[in-house]
Structure formats: C-alpha cells, structure tokens
Length: 215
Image (tube, rainbow, N blue to C red; front, top):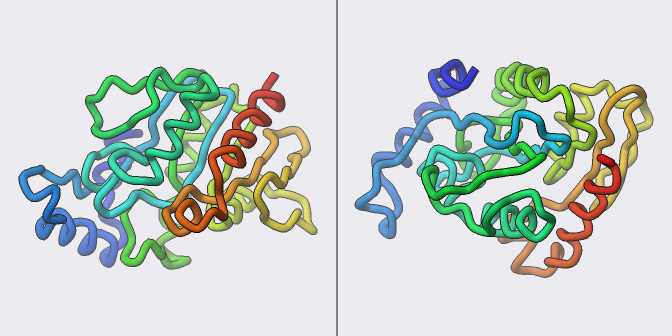
C-alpha cells in the first residue's frame, strides 16, 4: 500500500507542484533533500483512533515524507497527541526522529501537497481510494477525528453519513450507524492557532473526547 501511494503520479498539477517545491525549497531548508512525493499515513496498525487531515504541507510532509511532520500544524497535533497519551514524544520534526503512535493513526485526504493548500475536487476524488484502503487496514478504529471541513466532507462521504449531516464545527460529533464515531476539530493551521480560533485547551478536549468514545 505504501509503495502504491508513494509512486502515484495521477494528478499532473500536484506532481508538478510538489516537485517544484522540492527543487526550489525554502531557504531555511536549502541543504535538505525534499521527499517531494505522495505521503502515506503513519501510526499504529491496531489504532482505535484515526485522524484525517487535508493534505501534506509543501515544506512539512512534502519535505520530510511523513504526514504532519516538520510544520507548525504538526507541532500542534503531535504535542496534543503526546499530552493525551497517544504519542511517545511531543515533537515530529523528521521521519527518523523516533516518534511512535500508540492506538492512533494519522492520514490525509489528499496525499500530495497542493498549491495554496487547495486540492481540486478531481484531485480529491482520485486520491480517495488510498484513504479507503488505509481505513480497511485499520479494523479496530472506533473514532475518526477530522481536522477541518475538507476532511469532514471526505470522511462523511466515505462513511455514507446519514443526511442531514451535522454541520461542521469544533467538537461536533457525527455518529455513524454500525461504524466509527466522527469527531470534528478545527484544523491546527497557523490561520486558526495564531488567531485563537483554536486553542490548546480546545484541541486537548478533542482527544480527551476521543478517548471516551473509543473505550
């Protein structure tokens, strides 16, 4: 599965962008070799918690090769997972930094870094089989935390969430008949964390609730 994801070149715009970023690089990472390929999920194969984000960051996962690794959103996510007991350390800076997840798995709806962090609907739909396959390999998942409305819409569609669906909002829960609970969170992007739309206590509450729902 990992090889299939990493080798994908189905979306010309995304392939061109991720490789351009990997060549031009950010000045602070000029001496690093960028991954510049699709990014597979990461975590515990026996996880009861699945976390789904939007897509790798251009200079985060697209650089390091691990989802939510090497960017500010990942700083927030893995620090929260560590406080909640899901991670062995609070930081995720590179793929070989020793990070381990316990009872949690992290993936993205789209596996390539998109320009302006905005994949098209066609690009999203081409990528969905990867998430479907990964979810099929996580049979113990009881809770899916979706980071942002984009991820919520993707997961709600995959799980055929009954309509009318609950409107996306931080802390909103969407029970799935005979399936995992879906728990919504604002994305830990700088746009949300710098403005106070998402605070540490708000984010921690999501994973406290995830623990409760997965018991």
